[in-house]
Image (cartoon, rainbow, N blue to C red; front, side, top):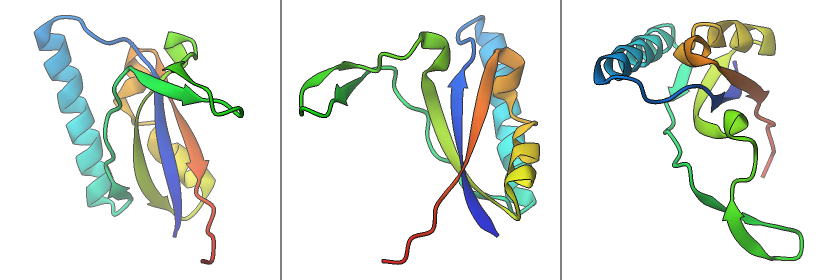
Length: 112
């Protein structure tokens, strides 16, 4: 099995408390399914909207500066036998229902 990083990008936030609760329940159910199937290695965490950007000159500025729809909102670590399988598993992510997307990235193995 290989490891893959899911980066959760974009998606609408807010709505009514009931809508927020419903989407949170969908996230919990999806994560539970990934755990049950043995694919979820680490559920990760959501990320705050603020941060800093350090450029090649060492200058630190407020950020991130990506368009709001592309901001990374969180991450998870999954295991799958291929990139195709990891992408297939991501198709169940609730962020897709609110206009967001999941970037699926293989984690490079390094011998250290």
